[in-house]
Image (cartoon, rainbow, N blue to C red; front, side, top):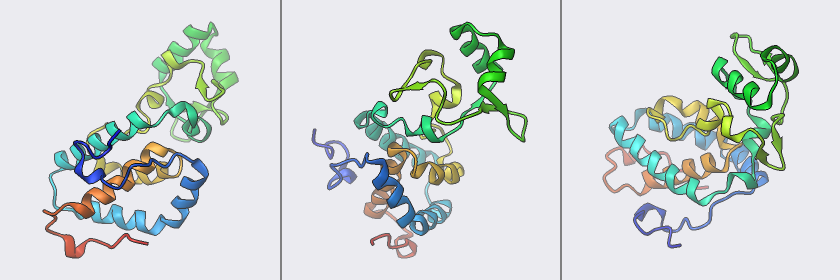
Length: 195
């Protein structure tokens, strides 16, 4: 597949990084760069809807190229929040009482929410969710790049950069996209992210 077809800013970015060890190392090496890019994006003179549109396009492309079942790192390292509906759907599907389910699988956070009591997720087997059809809303939404208001969720993006190959690749492509944007008025203020 020619990744640049319809995506002029993807030229030269033909290989997605999916090796979680390399992503974790890159995350450490690029920590300052990622925070500086976040600060830049917060002040970047672009309508929020336009930035969201760019991120959504990148997310659609990257997520179509990466098989989450080869990684499942989110299920190994992220604790989703579960609401009452999530708990009900899961208990109905596995045939367990809500009380027993909470006792066996959940803990309450300081904020009063429920999350799984251990990692990896107790329903992860061979990188596959055994409760995929009724997985919690937080799991369905992960890595949350399809949502609006990307610029207000950048701390979460940076947190997930080392966990999720999709987030890693979208953030790196976004850096490229912004760097290559010939209409960038703030280019002189843009931080040089080259290593």
